[in-house]
Image (cartoon, rainbow, N blue to C red; front, side):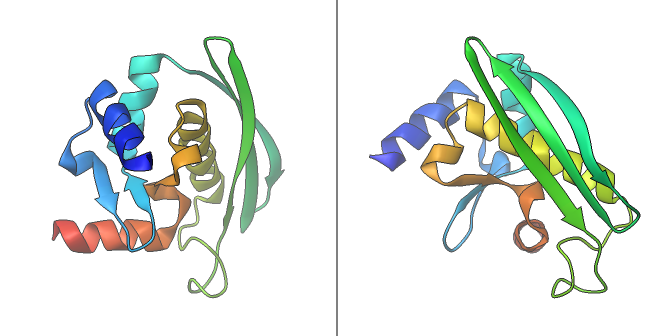
Length: 134
């Protein structure tokens, strides 16, 4: 069962209620939670810039954890609103890197396979977390 596996992973990585948020359809781990996981596992990550334009960036992440190797991508598109893009910041390369980081950590540690996402993967996730914390 996913719930049992998630509980096991939360305990393994010492995640607290501040590190996890339940979205209507997803479980989301906050940036601090993902940083805890990465630090505990000492995941080796390298990046490659695929696209780096003023309004759009794609970063490829290569990760290693023990004998597991994976790669994934993070992207960011600056838009006037969320209908036109997936970020409202001008730091599109940095946002793409944060998204690639979250994805590679969650994939290597088994969270992604259980439907867990990082808060940086969607501005919608970040807004909902902010609203709950307030």
